[in-house]
Length: 291
Image (cartoon, rainbow, N blue to C red; front, side):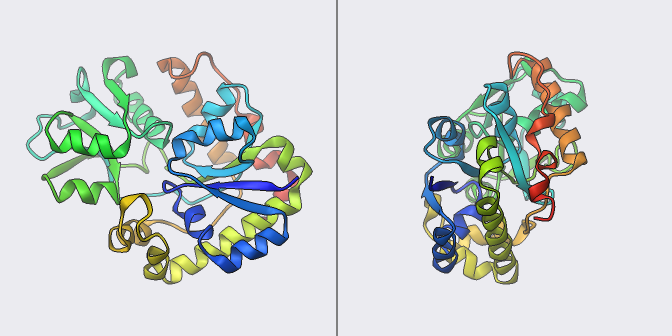
């Protein structure tokens, strides 16, 4: 079976790798191909359909996939991403703290790390999810509504944040990296991880090499993304320059954070019931321990 790797704009590492033709050719020889699509929000349905077997998102979709009964596991993660941005309000907004969000609207990118970030921040501030009107909107629509003054707050990082700042002055109320580590996570079907370890390892190696090249020359990587998701190479560059690069094996600390946040999700009603995420990390797959 040929393995299909999903690549979308919200995961720059895979998006860049899918555009490095030498790497793509080498992975094709290992039985791997890429499917490039427009939004990370559809990663879970694509895996459920069998259209893709491996992919990369934030840390939230693997929790949601597990809650939906999918047998999935992570095979890699990035360092914590202390990106520019986070929970953003207009500069003249009365919202000064997370508690001020009670009764207000917040726009989130669909099926993304935004939910995990906001849930963790609200939990830490003693605010229940149900006290905030958090809704999922496509980034372009959320940006336009925020700029028009129709939204109280938005979760946004570069390059979307840069677009917003060109239109209105903003203030950041909470940043990723404290209550939520904000990692890129590479994951897929457990049967694939069990049955095709050499192919998965080849993908990890290619990702590591591509990330090394990006860290050394972010301008060249930005050129590979020119026009992706409607952003120019110049618009992509700040996000690429600020990100950590490299792939690591998910560890006990990551597992503990995922379990803690899965518990928050259940308490907030974001998933139907509590789940145990212990089988969703690569520590369960010794073949990847050296990846």
